[in-house]
Image 1 (cartoon, rainbow, N blue to C red):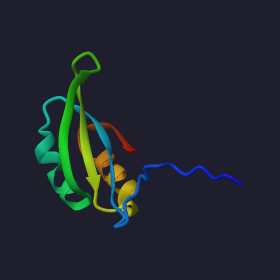
Image 2 (image 1 turned 180 degrees about the horizontal axis):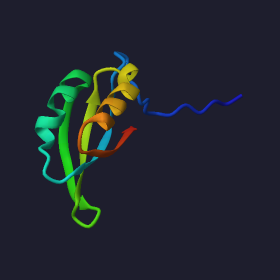
Image 3 (image 1 turned 90 degrees about the horizontal axis):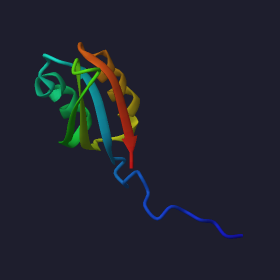
Image 4 (image 1 turned 90 degrees about the vertical axis):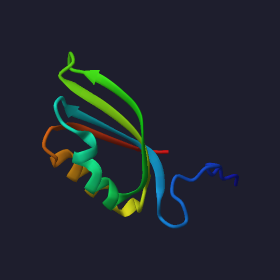
Length: 95
C-alpha cells in the first residue's frame, strides 16, 4: 500500500501554525489599536500584507501573514475578532 503524505505539514511540532488572516473592518476604525491585544494573545507574529477597500469604499479588507501561537486557539481567535466592534468578517486560512 502506498500512502501519500503532504510534504509540508501545516502544524509545527510546538503546536503553532502559519497562515493568512483577512479581516473586513468598517472605515473609521484603527486596526492596530483594535487588534493589538488579541494579536498579542494568540499570535507570535503578524505582518500586514494587503489592504483593499470593499463595499464601495465603506470598509477595509486587511490581510495579514500570521504565525499562530497554538492551533488550539484558532476558533477562539476568530470568534473574538468577529465580536470586535466594527469587524464585519474574519477569514483565517492555515497554510
